[in-house]
Image 1 (cartoon, one colour):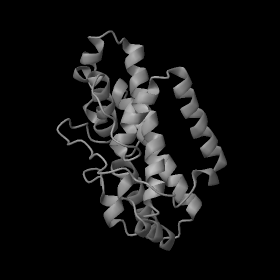
Image 2 (image 1 turned 180 degrees about the vertical axis):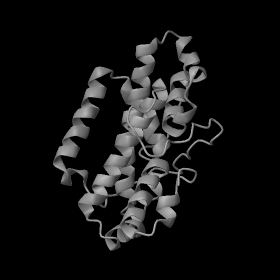
Image 3 (image 1 turned 30 degrees about the horizontal axis):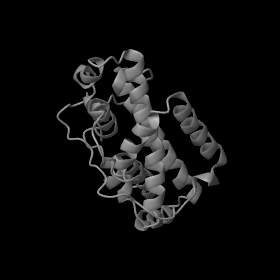
Image 4 (image 1 turned 60 degrees about the vertical axis):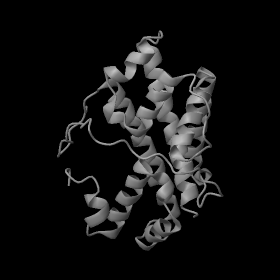
Length: 215
């Protein structure tokens, strides 16, 4: 199972668990590829709309935690039955969204009030902390199909880091940070940039996934 990241989503005999894994995989890799068919299969597998919301939000959130862990090179701090394989830098980046997803979401995150409130507070904090984070948010939105292309490359080094955090966090390392260190970023500023890119990825993945479910 560890060798094949999609084994549960494709071959697990229990339809409910297989569907949960499929949703989690798509939120992680290509949230814009979700469809009404996935929503229908989730219902057929016994998942309520609230559970679909839960798995989408939780998958996006764990993607954030893993990206932060990749950025700071932290090891697992808990016991697991099967250790994950070491990161392979040669693994290709995730795909960019082919286009922005527009429309009314199939499900509203506001149906889970505590989750919606936490996401809003989190985003408001990031913007208030560093207004420049709105630029990071726009880049992430473009990559994930949550916004239109952002012109210009006047902040090429920062944009490159944001792209790597979003699409290939397993490649983060000293080479990723060197261009920003060269223009004055210290460890705290680098961490803030990674955390902001990862956080805005949570918000965009959830919005795109819920919109894609509607077709």
